[in-house]
Image (cartoon, rainbow, N blue to C red; front, side, top):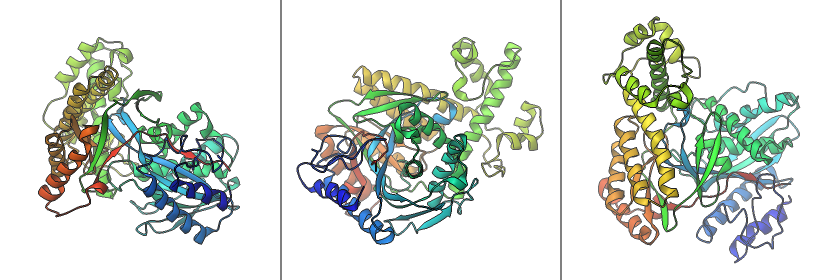
Length: 514
């Protein structure tokens, strides 16, 4: 695509009709005269978003041409997400229920002739980064934004290796990136960057992996593992929804194997995001807060597996908390639930107690269950390992996902709102990933008219989401803005529109074909 073609498409944003700026994955370039409906229209809330989107793409274009020139440019985008319900269930093998949103990480990029990748960001807080494509790419320091690009590239190297392409035979790319997903807000800006980087790397090397439904499923699984590169031991929700989002629909996503089921969002309602302004940071300390939960879940599985083996005098195929089902274990569900309830006690476990239960040493228990991605061992928490609380949240939250899908398909909006409220309580009390600001924001949102409200994302800050009747959105934004930012945070007058905004469900990540 030439710069002139791109500028014609970009310029048409200001008119009543617009070109499809970003074709679907594996799509084709549209003429500038094509009317607005199409992939671009399904990626943003138009015309409400038109001015904001146009200004952002113009910044990206100016910065890219100034730094890299105008030859062979390609456009790409990867949306963020909000999770309607199903928090911290994905890495436990239980379903989630997210939607891709009209906030994304976008880029202009062009392939290089060498093995180097260079990325710059229109946000000066993220300095330019560059690195060589090698079989094992060393990371930048923890928390560096360039690690998410490295994660996407590293994750795709295995795919290329299977087709006989080693790292030395692959082309790099140069890219200018600009996003409008609030950073550290629990809306998956980091995973969107991983997805975007992978798409650019695939495009630069002529791969067609992302051009079929099966390929997108494979890519989602690849990138879920790839993001472990940055140190978070998460599941695959964020990558799957960013790649496979659908306009007007949320996706129920199941794992092992990865499967998606579209569910229409309720007519006459909007999902409204409210930023708590507490950043869910990706520092080493913050990663440990996050990674403690998967460790506690692994320990709960180990304890329950021994209890089940003793009860049934055989080893059962229990690997994840999501396997605690009659379908997987071949044991009546009532018996599974009763045994789990009797086995895991309310008091936190010490490492020595767990080692005794598992009949091994504390050192071996730590090595087997508490090892971080970098090979270091997560220390025993001062308040102990809270296995029962984590188990209860995960299992009950997985069931809430199933009931939420049933409620929306039946048009029972009040029931769905109640499940959102129950989910927040569980995230706060059992998984302990909320914070005072989020709790206050959720309570204020309900008082302002939300049918249901809860935190979204990994927690420890970030955003709350609320289900609000369309006719009440404007009043809701004003009430929450005044009560939370002006009252609770005492920050004075704020631009509420940049902190509280309704979202629509949009199409998944894409590139514009050459």
